[in-house]
Structure formats: C-alpha cells, structure tokens
Image 1 (spheres, rainbow, N blue to C red):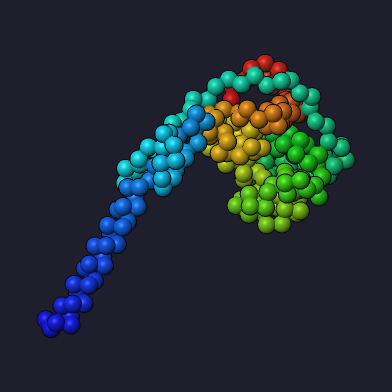
Image 2: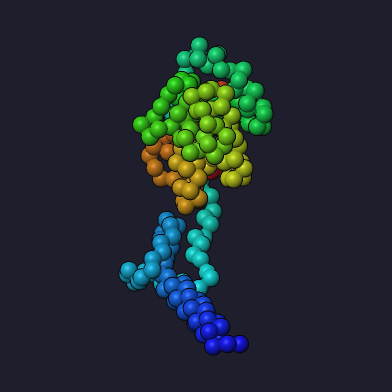
Length: 224
C-alpha cells in the first residue's frame, strides 16, 4: 500500500469514527416526558425538571387508557330537508352497503355535518356532504369532495376505518370523526371538548331517530 492510499484509508476511518461519535452523542442528548393528557414532549435539552434522558434507541410511548363511560347531554335529532335527504338516499344506502356500514349512521353524520348540502364548506375548510378535510379526503380516495359520490365514498371509508380502529365503539368513532383519532387516543374516551361532546350527542340522537324502535335511546350514560 503506497503512502497516498494509506493516508486516504486513515482519513476515511477517522471521518467515519467522528460521524458515529457525533450521532451517538446526539442520540444520547434527547430528553422527554409524557404529560397527564398522554402527550409526548421531546427536546434536545433538559428544559425543566420534567424532562428526563431518553436512552439511545428508545422512544416514549404513552400508556393506553381504558375507555370509560361518558355522560352525554340529551340532544334533539337533526332533521335535514326531506327533499335533500330523498335526493341522496339511494346513494347513501349503496355506499353504506359497500363498506358494511349502517345507512342510518351515515344519514346521521351527513345530517349533522352538512344537512345534506353537497356544496357545504366549513370555516376550517371541510367540504361536501360528509364534511371531509381535503387531506382526509385524499387519504381515503376522495379528490373531488364537491362530488357527492366521491365524498360519500371517502367518508364511508373513513368512518369504517374509525370503527375498526376503536373496536366498533360507536361513540369513540363518532368523536374521532369530529375531533380526530389522535384526540380520542390521548383521552381514551370522548375528549372533553364541548363541541365534540355536543356533536356525538347530536349524531347519536339522529341515528336513534332514524333507526328501528328497538335501538337504545339516548340520554343516559353510554359506553364509549
């Protein structure tokens, strides 16, 4: 091995060693903690006594909370305009059947979300019959959310996903549709947001009204 090649190999080894050392140092310098709401906080410095060193290769995972009973205030069913409901009834039933959903549940969410107005746009940018945010719509295959069929298809996929994620706990899935799945995961129940709890109560009341007489009535504590 000539001198030039020897020096090149030596320099490469030193550079690799320095890079690994810097990486290990950076990994060792992470601090974090989990707050009472289950949120994970991570920093590269110890900002206050709550922040503790995180061993290299490990992450902080919040403990799963056991779903609890939530008392929802009684709400009146939301009655969408009969002509609008009739215009989309067949399509709602077709989409619900395709994704193994109860059409009465889809009807309840549509009634509360948009009143069956396919052109509805919320202050936050949610669109269409099932009021999907563009990112959520795209995630579940709906690119033209003003198109009723695409909106219902994407909304049904999203609802089916939430029901599966929360083990068919209906109130949790409905809460996640409003507040986001992350919020429900953090609290392990319907989040303590007034808007979300009112939303769940309205959807459940509308669902009960649209369903058969043997459906349990709303107003008492229900399992989330």
